[in-house]
Image (tube, rainbow, N blue to C red; front, side, top):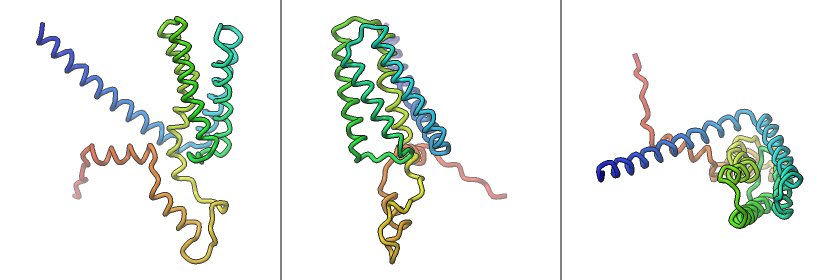
Length: 200
Protein backbone atom coordinates (compact mmCIF):
# COMPACT_ATOMS: atom_id res chain seq x y z
CA UNK A 1 0.00 0.00 0.00
CA UNK A 2 2.75 2.45 0.97
CA UNK A 3 4.91 1.46 -2.00
CA UNK A 4 2.04 2.08 -4.45
CA UNK A 5 1.44 5.48 -2.85
CA UNK A 6 5.10 6.41 -3.43
CA UNK A 7 4.83 5.19 -7.02
CA UNK A 8 1.78 7.39 -7.59
CA UNK A 9 3.68 10.45 -6.31
CA UNK A 10 6.64 9.60 -8.55
CA UNK A 11 4.35 9.15 -11.56
CA UNK A 12 2.74 12.55 -10.90
CA UNK A 13 6.19 14.16 -10.95
CA UNK A 14 7.06 12.41 -14.23
CA UNK A 15 3.72 13.45 -15.75
CA UNK A 16 4.26 17.07 -14.65
CA UNK A 17 7.68 17.06 -16.32
CA UNK A 18 6.22 15.65 -19.56
CA UNK A 19 3.39 18.18 -19.57
CA UNK A 20 5.83 21.04 -18.96
CA UNK A 21 8.08 19.89 -21.81
CA UNK A 22 5.08 19.50 -24.12
CA UNK A 23 3.85 23.01 -23.33
CA UNK A 24 7.35 24.46 -23.84
CA UNK A 25 7.70 22.67 -27.19
CA UNK A 26 4.26 23.86 -28.27
CA UNK A 27 5.02 27.46 -27.30
CA UNK A 28 8.33 27.33 -29.15
CA UNK A 29 6.61 25.95 -32.26
CA UNK A 30 3.85 28.59 -32.10
CA UNK A 31 6.43 31.37 -31.67
CA UNK A 32 8.29 30.07 -34.75
CA UNK A 33 5.07 30.03 -36.79
CA UNK A 34 4.15 33.56 -35.71
CA UNK A 35 7.61 34.84 -36.67
CA UNK A 36 7.38 33.19 -40.06
CA UNK A 37 3.79 34.25 -40.90
CA UNK A 38 3.16 37.57 -39.15
CA UNK A 39 0.42 38.69 -41.55
CA UNK A 40 -1.50 35.45 -41.07
CA UNK A 41 -0.97 35.66 -37.29
CA UNK A 42 -2.45 39.17 -37.24
CA UNK A 43 -5.42 37.93 -39.29
CA UNK A 44 -6.04 34.98 -36.96
CA UNK A 45 -5.71 37.06 -33.78
CA UNK A 46 -8.07 39.68 -35.24
CA UNK A 47 -10.71 37.02 -35.79
CA UNK A 48 -10.10 35.70 -32.28
CA UNK A 49 -10.81 39.20 -30.92
CA UNK A 50 -14.05 39.35 -32.94
CA UNK A 51 -15.08 35.85 -31.79
CA UNK A 52 -14.40 36.67 -28.14
CA UNK A 53 -16.41 39.89 -28.42
CA UNK A 54 -19.27 37.91 -29.97
CA UNK A 55 -19.11 35.44 -27.07
CA UNK A 56 -19.40 38.31 -24.58
CA UNK A 57 -22.43 39.68 -26.42
CA UNK A 58 -23.95 36.18 -26.51
CA UNK A 59 -23.43 35.78 -22.76
CA UNK A 60 -25.12 39.13 -22.24
CA UNK A 61 -28.13 38.14 -24.33
CA UNK A 62 -28.62 34.44 -23.59
CA UNK A 63 -27.21 33.97 -20.08
CA UNK A 64 -27.64 35.68 -16.73
CA UNK A 65 -24.12 37.01 -16.62
CA UNK A 66 -23.71 40.42 -14.97
CA UNK A 67 -23.30 43.45 -17.18
CA UNK A 68 -20.02 44.59 -15.61
CA UNK A 69 -18.31 41.29 -16.45
CA UNK A 70 -19.23 41.51 -20.12
CA UNK A 71 -18.46 45.24 -20.37
CA UNK A 72 -14.93 44.78 -19.05
CA UNK A 73 -14.53 41.85 -21.45
CA UNK A 74 -15.58 44.01 -24.40
CA UNK A 75 -13.27 46.84 -23.26
CA UNK A 76 -10.45 44.33 -23.05
CA UNK A 77 -11.10 43.09 -26.60
CA UNK A 78 -11.19 46.70 -27.85
CA UNK A 79 -7.75 47.24 -26.30
CA UNK A 80 -6.51 44.06 -27.98
CA UNK A 81 -7.82 45.42 -31.27
CA UNK A 82 -5.84 48.64 -30.73
CA UNK A 83 -2.71 46.58 -30.02
CA UNK A 84 -3.14 44.81 -33.35
CA UNK A 85 -2.97 48.06 -35.34
CA UNK A 86 0.85 48.05 -35.17
CA UNK A 87 1.27 44.27 -35.16
CA UNK A 88 3.83 42.62 -35.00
CA UNK A 89 5.31 45.60 -33.16
CA UNK A 90 3.95 45.45 -29.62
CA UNK A 91 5.33 48.11 -27.32
CA UNK A 92 5.10 46.82 -23.76
CA UNK A 93 5.61 50.34 -22.39
CA UNK A 94 2.67 51.83 -24.30
CA UNK A 95 -0.42 53.00 -22.46
CA UNK A 96 -2.62 50.61 -24.48
CA UNK A 97 -0.56 47.56 -23.50
CA UNK A 98 -0.42 48.50 -19.82
CA UNK A 99 -4.16 49.22 -19.77
CA UNK A 100 -4.81 45.84 -21.42
CA UNK A 101 -2.77 44.10 -18.71
CA UNK A 102 -4.61 45.97 -15.94
CA UNK A 103 -8.02 45.12 -17.42
CA UNK A 104 -6.94 41.48 -17.73
CA UNK A 105 -6.10 41.36 -14.01
CA UNK A 106 -9.35 43.16 -13.08
CA UNK A 107 -11.35 40.84 -15.36
CA UNK A 108 -9.80 37.80 -13.65
CA UNK A 109 -10.65 39.19 -10.22
CA UNK A 110 -14.26 39.92 -11.20
CA UNK A 111 -14.66 36.50 -12.82
CA UNK A 112 -13.28 34.69 -9.76
CA UNK A 113 -15.58 36.71 -7.53
CA UNK A 114 -18.64 35.98 -9.70
CA UNK A 115 -17.97 32.25 -10.07
CA UNK A 116 -17.25 32.01 -6.35
CA UNK A 117 -20.71 33.40 -5.57
CA UNK A 118 -22.77 31.68 -8.30
CA UNK A 119 -22.54 27.95 -8.94
CA UNK A 120 -21.53 26.77 -12.41
CA UNK A 121 -20.02 23.44 -13.39
CA UNK A 122 -16.27 23.21 -13.75
CA UNK A 123 -16.49 22.79 -17.54
CA UNK A 124 -18.58 25.98 -17.85
CA UNK A 125 -16.15 27.98 -15.70
CA UNK A 126 -13.20 26.60 -17.67
CA UNK A 127 -14.95 27.46 -20.94
CA UNK A 128 -15.45 31.05 -19.81
CA UNK A 129 -11.86 31.48 -18.65
CA UNK A 130 -10.43 29.81 -21.75
CA UNK A 131 -12.48 31.57 -24.41
CA UNK A 132 -13.15 34.94 -22.77
CA UNK A 133 -9.99 35.53 -20.77
CA UNK A 134 -7.01 33.51 -21.97
CA UNK A 135 -7.12 32.89 -25.73
CA UNK A 136 -6.37 36.38 -27.08
CA UNK A 137 -3.82 37.43 -24.40
CA UNK A 138 -2.06 34.10 -24.87
CA UNK A 139 -1.90 34.63 -28.64
CA UNK A 140 -0.51 38.14 -28.12
CA UNK A 141 2.01 36.82 -25.60
CA UNK A 142 3.28 34.19 -28.05
CA UNK A 143 3.49 36.80 -30.82
CA UNK A 144 5.71 39.16 -28.78
CA UNK A 145 8.77 37.41 -30.19
CA UNK A 146 7.76 38.33 -33.76
CA UNK A 147 8.74 41.91 -32.92
CA UNK A 148 12.40 40.91 -32.69
CA UNK A 149 12.81 40.40 -36.42
CA UNK A 150 10.96 43.47 -37.68
CA UNK A 151 13.28 45.62 -39.75
CA UNK A 152 13.92 49.15 -38.49
CA UNK A 153 12.00 51.99 -40.08
CA UNK A 154 12.83 55.66 -40.46
CA UNK A 155 10.35 56.61 -37.73
CA UNK A 156 12.73 55.11 -35.17
CA UNK A 157 15.82 56.87 -36.46
CA UNK A 158 18.22 59.25 -34.96
CA UNK A 159 20.29 61.36 -37.38
CA UNK A 160 21.82 59.19 -40.08
CA UNK A 161 25.32 60.58 -39.58
CA UNK A 162 28.15 58.86 -37.77
CA UNK A 163 27.67 55.74 -35.66
CA UNK A 164 24.11 56.49 -34.59
CA UNK A 165 22.35 55.35 -37.73
CA UNK A 166 19.16 53.33 -37.89
CA UNK A 167 20.75 49.90 -38.13
CA UNK A 168 23.34 50.45 -35.39
CA UNK A 169 20.71 51.86 -33.04
CA UNK A 170 18.33 49.00 -33.85
CA UNK A 171 20.93 46.27 -33.32
CA UNK A 172 22.18 47.79 -30.07
CA UNK A 173 18.61 47.92 -28.72
CA UNK A 174 17.78 44.47 -30.08
CA UNK A 175 20.63 42.79 -28.25
CA UNK A 176 19.14 43.86 -24.91
CA UNK A 177 15.64 42.55 -25.63
CA UNK A 178 14.26 39.37 -24.18
CA UNK A 179 11.46 37.45 -25.82
CA UNK A 180 9.69 34.16 -25.50
CA UNK A 181 11.46 32.66 -28.50
CA UNK A 182 14.91 33.79 -27.33
CA UNK A 183 14.21 32.27 -23.91
CA UNK A 184 13.19 28.92 -25.44
CA UNK A 185 16.20 29.01 -27.80
CA UNK A 186 18.49 29.59 -24.84
CA UNK A 187 16.79 26.78 -22.91
CA UNK A 188 17.09 24.43 -25.89
CA UNK A 189 20.78 25.22 -26.36
CA UNK A 190 21.64 24.90 -22.69
CA UNK A 191 19.54 21.83 -21.77
CA UNK A 192 19.57 19.61 -24.85
CA UNK A 193 22.89 18.13 -25.97
CA UNK A 194 24.22 19.20 -29.33
CA UNK A 195 25.16 16.59 -31.90
CA UNK A 196 28.37 17.10 -33.81
CA UNK A 197 28.29 16.21 -37.47
CA UNK A 198 30.99 13.82 -38.59
CA UNK A 199 33.15 14.98 -41.43
CA UNK A 200 33.92 12.13 -43.84
